[in-house]
Length: 358
Ligand SMILES: *Cc1c(COP(=O)(O)O)cnc(C)c1O
Picture (cartoon, rainbow, N blue to C red):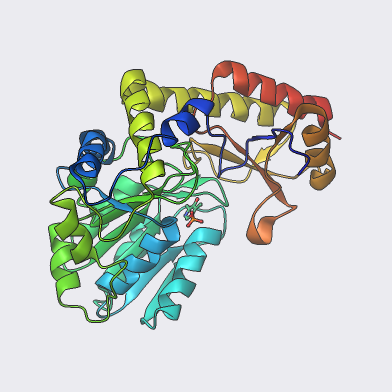
């Protein structure tokens, strides 16, 4: 660290604005005070609208993995089916096993979307009571077909659907109630453009009923505790109040921009990145029709020295992209267009990429 501001175009954490940091520096309040309930309550209708739900939205002081692990611990009685096709979704299987649960992967190759037909076949065995899906696989740039996947799950009401929208939330429309998603979770440091440390999630009535029958849910991530507390706009334990101040500010900003405008801004900026990729002779890692709107995962088909490139853009333009994640590090690179970016800032970033391309 040389103290110089390096702007992040990695797919999380991303750039956090000065205004957001300023909002976070509000004076501390007691977490059992009506001031805190007021703060939570200010965020709540905006959150319900982004989640597409009438259910309460819970705030968890943890990164997303806390809630991803909690979903396994709170909901799995029989066996969990983890839909795997990238670093985050593959790891969810590992987490299920580490929680001592019976678990199995529905695996696709990295870069491929989850196939709803294969999913239906698997669930039809009757072995499973929970399915996990990563909506936007940040490691591969694949956006999975959530509506089709949720459509399959609607045929199996005894199987709960848990969806990670960590890198798509607030950048694309989501509708928990309409799709009957049992748990939808996200984190603060991706498209919401907040610092890491806060997760947001919803839990259906059906999933709460399941949790009530499961032993060893623990305390910190007990869904029933979240429900009970959220009824009073409280959290089970002392939350990251400063981040919640930041969240309220960010939600107001999203509301002012308009969610629809925000979605189309992400789509537009994403297509600018796509155009850069194609005009420089690179190939997409994800197939057409299943590409993320918040980041682009690019195949290194030109075999360039990615670390040298990133170090050059950092030195000359004070910005970085990501050099690939997990087993496709070096074979791919990833460019984020999520958060507060504009056509101007994305153009400047793409010019910096062209300028330093080896
Ligand atoms: C970043 C990310 C996570 C992990 O979030 P943490 O904040 O590290 O817990 C999980 N899933 C997806 C899809 C992600 O992009």
